[in-house]
Length: 201
Image (cartoon, rainbow, N blue to C red):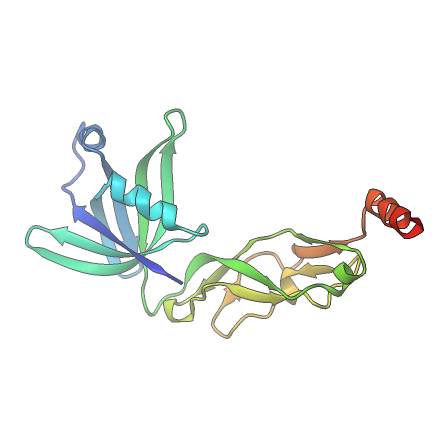
């Protein structure tokens, strides 16, 4: 999974009016936390952060956070955990970043990559993907760009459930096993009627 660079600065303890001042300066307040990290208050550049968000192809976005504190700095792999928006103005107002540990599992959304053509589609059925992502738990070294799912055996009326999806060792799916991931539905009556009309013609 791609890791996008992002810069941040450590900010002082919360003060009255500080957050409003930061937003006037096109800065976004944030917090960094994780299993091996003491919570740290951060300031991020609004323009740069929005640019990073536009690069995200799915819900979980990994960043290489470069944190500066005066003349010193450090880098941490992070997950953009939560974004807070002002829904009236449509503006981003706060961000939570989760520092990834090499020894701890963390939750992340992985996109599903459906592979091959279902046999039911060759018979006129309609392939319907219900889920586009899976919620999984894994360590960073087990992280995947996507989860490949072979749907070639799905016939008309068949459904693929979460429990049917094999995943590599070290990756655990958190979605409910009975949830439907994809199915092949029968062709619509309209489509069947048109097909018969074409045959007669």
